[in-house]
Image: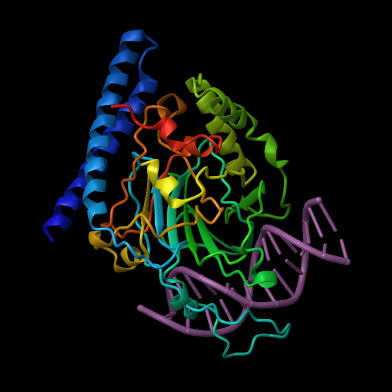
Length: 374
DNA sequence: CTTATTTGACCAAG
DNA sequence: CTTGGTCAAATAAG
């Protein structure tokens, strides 16, 4: 319990520091374009970075001691990467048996249960993440098919429901829910449920996630040629990938954001680009020190720090990268950004936030390339 | 033609 | 009753 409190406190600290960082970063945009101001702001940001790095580092150390070594299986749990990002709050992932897919073309029988029963079986395989979407692309390597959209009470944006395209052909029961966050519309909350059993990933696939705003009549789908919107980002990221010395000024960042905004708001469509995670094994991944995994147990019990593990979640290792996402940092900061996870078992344990800009990076860039330099 | 998305309806849980 | 998750017919796109 003491440990819990301590960790909770750490989490609050992280939140506060993150806010500070963000505020400072915003301030940066308002300051005159003068070298001194810039230097000062950078120093402030740097201070936040260090504090965050120290905090999250300690948190990690703490939780990792308590890892449950034998977590059952991969593909479960939550992953977190990319720091400073406010933690999120989740849901209670409970899912149950996806009861038989209604295969008879007929009208469903009255008693066919459709929904909540599906929960039980899946509660071990829920991942939740929040994705900063500005300037980002993402693709988790799987192909998804949208099967529903719901307006959620109290939420401005509808929730979109996707299932694996291979549900029928291979019985893959993985699903995900994607919802734009109210507080920050550029952030998507993605909840993964179920594990992919469709064994291979659609390499280089580009998944399209479509958000139709409720108020907007959606008669014509597909209005935008996908890849045009993000060309700038891709180039920028390619640069990043190639040289690791990125010249990123705010205009390019802003441009990236604008492009995405246009994609989101104008066309109601966001294209997630392929992104492959560079690691092939958990060890490899963990060695990067920037990624955290959470066990299902942790996910499920909602607040037990002692179940944190780094060994059981593995959408990554199964060749299929989880989407990486964006950061609150701009690319300029990326390289010296702490990317350690700040996932906290508190809150409700179901979210993680990833770095936006990072998401757009070439998958082959090891995360530690961006490691924070103390 | 096949495949994907939209969207109202259905259903279970609370 | 309300809410959220799912289904499936209609529709659009390729």
